[in-house]
Image (cartoon, rainbow, N blue to C red; front, side):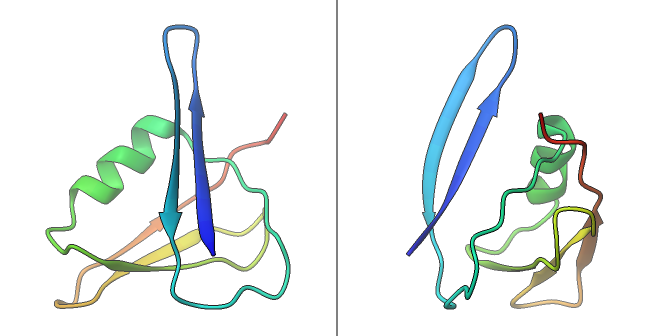
Length: 79
């Protein structure tokens, strides 16, 4: 399975399928500010991180696999 990442702005469009290692029971559509998502992910030096989702209205928690680093990213309204 993959997590599909889409970024679309007035100046660019980007899409990537990232492999996931855990089964997801239900599909989830959630939106984040792309600049904050990039900044959050850039703060990790790991090749892999764990991302935890609850619902489109709850924050995503990102945890390092090799250190104590954790981050919380709040979702934005999806249109």
